[in-house]
Image (cartoon, rainbow, N blue to C red):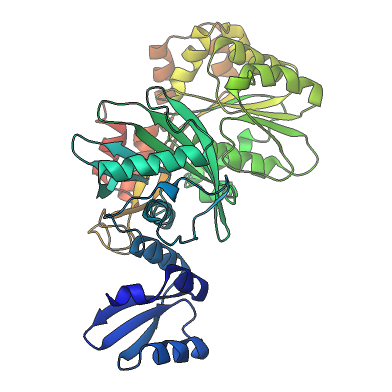
Length: 454
């Protein structure tokens, strides 16, 4: 077959691949379509054929070449090799499992996926990407191929390749051009075989500016006022995947003026911010949020960010830090802003202490935005979903003197809700309604994320 006339190494080294071949006509895709020397070499090698050339972007080239040289008809033992730092642009001769895995990573990157799932079924296996918060099936593969890919991932992550009965976690450093990835891998045993989830963290990502997160003008004013505090506790709440880390990183970036010592404790460190001391939690080594929060007081911080308050000990330390003159930002898993007060109470923090330190509560969600290219009808740009990118929904509760007194007195949820309603407070549904009316998102997307308004 004519596709085999160009070796993988030659294609990769020269940035050229056969795009199409029909009869005596061959179309070559080139990263540099101005390379006349390479074109002449190809024409001489394919004497008797009508050769044409077209440009291909490097990202598309990497995906296509990895897919082309990863036939499903073969498996290979030496797919389980290569050192810890994996270069996924590389194409291996006679290594279909390696090339297929590379193509999965490259396609996931091109589609801005946050996670890759490899799931075994009764007779086959499937690859999924999480794009804009939604799981999308990308490919069906054989169970044998899934096992080979899983084994290779375990090897790259320094996990036990032959252990299939116990959960394993690890990470892989991957690089493709200027796109370095920290891939967090979770492997758990399931009925039909191991389930593999890969979280893709781009180490080159820098935090967005506060203005570009999608907050309404009213919320931006509130946020600017909140970050002018020099001490106290600011909570950012919402479920997993609601953009809390991105919001916190944008806030820290804004506060990172060089005149304050900022320390963050995170799991994982998703954005790397120069000038900030960022600490990665390692629970298996005993480096928990609680342990590190106790230690950093001797580091003379002005601003502290706690990636997540998970237990009463961490909550108590965060409150203590805020009471002693630090500005503390922390996240909580609650459905709305009001619940954050009662979550702290349930963790054993007295109401008067919550009232003394709490400066504001921000609750948020992420909604998919209607695709600007097709207006929601579905196109190549949005992978036929009608949505492209996401925008934040938010609810802000700044804690003023009156609300502080109410919290200290042990306000009930019903009274708090009534107070907020009377003072013109805008909740998540109100913010969503504004974004629907502006044509940014759709009502169905709001119902999917928030449910029906009660």
